[in-house]
Image (cartoon, rainbow, N blue to C red):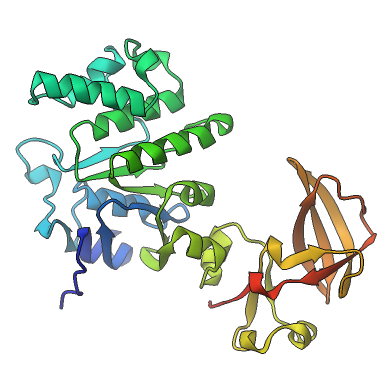
Length: 341
């Protein structure tokens, strides 16, 4: 039986199943829905099925069963189309798929074949401006950095105003120093165009910076979804907290149980975020510093608290206590949540 289709849902999957080897499913009975204008991040480990899901959404891989529907019409496998690719679905691959011997301008114009010249020139100028490529329009892809090539690839995908854009690890080939600016520009470009987009990533920072909604995928199943703020601030599952990079996942012991709110008693493990700890001169609790490590403009200290020896707190660069010293702090329970397994 089909799940209820909510209004404004642009792309959906129903009972999607895919296996490359008998008995080893990569995707397991996936039922998903994507609202028009939303940016979705699919976050998962290597081998979790995220790239396979993206290719199924784009019709590049044929599922074993179930289906993908765009505006309630089945998305056909590319092998069943007279012209390769879908006019309403564009994929941006990790290798960018740009023509290396022609200019950036001509790469974009190739995606506008069939449109009237007036629209073509207007759309070209618009895309070059949105993606900050106007100055580089006459250069060839080989003359650009990885981040600039990524912008061109997205401009090419956006050119014909498709219904949805799919991106496979869009920031994986970009240097760290350029990545934040590129994420900001791409997010702005997608929002400026009210463009629906789905991208896969293994980096929670990418999902946090660019996505309206985050899907957590594990072993071929979407195990948790939510808006970006909720997923990062209050993950429901232990696995989600782990893949988001949280380290203070603590098994409740008898000492911890004495001080925590009764509302958390139903859980076996708690997530303490950095904001959970407030270092004070005369706090309620004290703990010994096991280690102190420099991290960019701050320190990461590890403390021994109630026999739990792997609690990490990020502090200011002006933090003075050293290894083996004791610190005093309070716990803000508003920033602590229980985790399900």
